[in-house]
Length: 468
Image 1 (cartoon, rainbow, N blue to C red):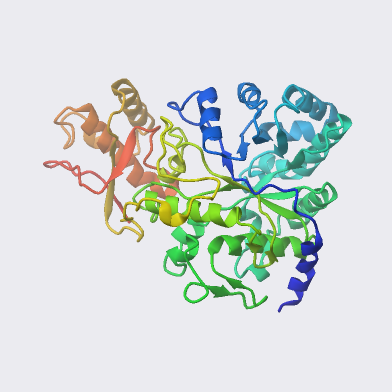
Image 2: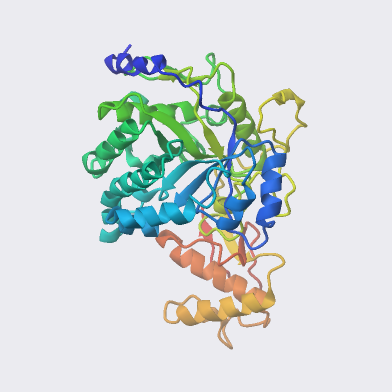
């Protein structure tokens, strides 16, 4: 048993009885086809969720949540952090405008300052926001205290990239660029206010980027002590799933800065039900398996906790309520939902965890758990709006003049005929994606494009492709 583990054990003497283990749900609204807020809150209640997390402090939604039994998490936008950090009056105003009109009838229990702020590192302004984060949290907490509000926990959700290393867990530590300047004062604040370390944690990402060395069963909670397990050489602790490993890496990193007892709260976790061709494992089978097993673990009585912190409730919000079709980036970004945009379930799930796993109908077999190898093209998606497509094609070819993206579409060139907007746009999408994928381009084009493994080339017109 490693010496640090002894340091963690005093936590078990603390009382966690007041923390509910009911599963929460992230309610994002980045879609142009989603149900109304009223319908969405009714859906959340019908799913027996215990908590709901918002990415703002939407007045309509907060009013709709009044009188419900749902614990609510609201959020200060990243863009307001620096202003609040430098001005207590701005913090008071934010609380006055976004908390007081709804509290206590709406059970606001978490006030999150920013979202994954420490993951942004492309400008001096981003790095200044790092330094403003704890002062903003402190001023918001003071504003709440001045209103005699003591049951709203203040914090900020972090991504796993705040850690320099996560493996093995006992070896983990925070990134050197934030460890002393941001994390140490943040942990001091969280400890002093008896708040949580709020963390967005997704086993899908480490597994999908390293399918050779991490088993899918380990990522989906299907491992056991006889087959899929990992023994941490530093602590001697045995891990049967990837989530526990990731959570304990945070616990060890916090302990190394002198804070072994700060509670964890999972602000986001889940598994994508679909994605791009180059994203293995993003399918309905794995999404249902992960979330069902997650729920059973998190609502277990007595609580399971993690190997480094057994027997402790970890409040958890699943990401997300809906598939959100206006999220940019890779295909998985638009496919984390438990529900379709029309409110019907993508797969059966019981957020209470009372339904035995064997009671669910068999899931469709997964057919993309191994990385795809071959050529992929980016073509016009089915059912797109013709006006939007025409505008996108013109904008893409005009903005790409000089880089060759649309050269083959000029009159007399090999891809000009047949003159078809869908064929021309498919060529332009494929050409641009192939040319700029290494610079971060995706096959999305505001929802107008999708990937295919079927070569759309015709005659002498050869579509550029991406080779995986």
